[in-house]
Length: 426
Image 1: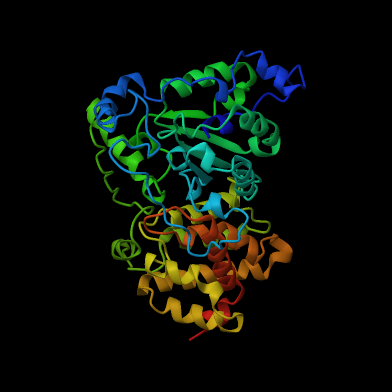
Image 2: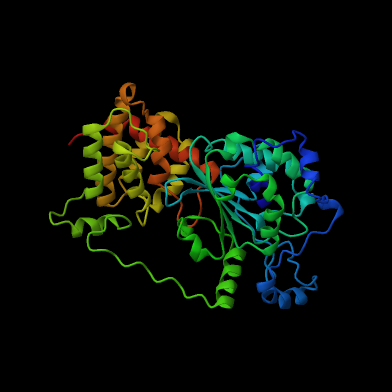
């Protein structure tokens, strides 16, 4: 999988248009004809040798489970994924997931090598289509990719022919807006592979590749607790940190006037006037009302910066504004008859804590007004929902399932379109 992502930014101006010929000059042998180097990094090889020997496996080679002490991880099939969906077999394995935004407000696509089954059990053509299907939803805006390399082995590596096909399929459309590729737990093998492909990978894309040796480093760029990190990857990371005797990161100290990452109730208690609406929301919404005409919530300048601050404030809350308790109800709203959905939403939000309800009312009314003037500011309720849906709700112990994104956005759109009915004036 890693090699697939690494091919998305191959030079546009290759001297030869013959892909096979260009890659052939690198003197690589097809995977099916040659045994790849071991995936076990030399510095950590001793960590897995003992348990590998107990399993009767070859020294230094990971079994399919990607965890020498356990059976392959069982992942839960998304409840709303239908068996006749063309991507059912791929999606249910959760090899590819969406994990909300990183610390820069960019959508994060997560790829887990350990969830790839042996090659004979996976339709790689469908996998490639599913990758494109996933990325197509996000490539028009900036996005990042997190690749968990642990678990890629001789049994589940994609074939050389598949890499060639991926090279042809992932064109400039996909590589233009990818801002970072985080390779977590890189081995010497993956680093060597990058060196081999260096002649045909642009310098621009090369600067986007970041090696992340352990999950503590990844925390600098995004919130790991909002991603579904496979258990075997977590255990492997613990062994790495124990081997390298890494000190656990100290919790960040709260600043006296800190606004981001603080619970709503605590913000109200800290406010001298005990206002229910956080200062950040009040100031950004006031500024946007005063200066905003055409508002692009994905652009970082002027009035747009205020909009991004508002979105970031919501994403930084310790618990989503709609709370974890409402997650399943929101995702299942589509099962409610359309003529009953507004009534269901009104009933749902009545269970919110008082602070959450007050802030949600303020936010929805503000964004609903923006949507009412979409002929001037170009921000329809649908556009606003795409931006703010993932900032209002996410699962507690999971990344946002691809199948949960649309229900969350639809719920958010209904809030913006029907805010007067949902929050009637008292």
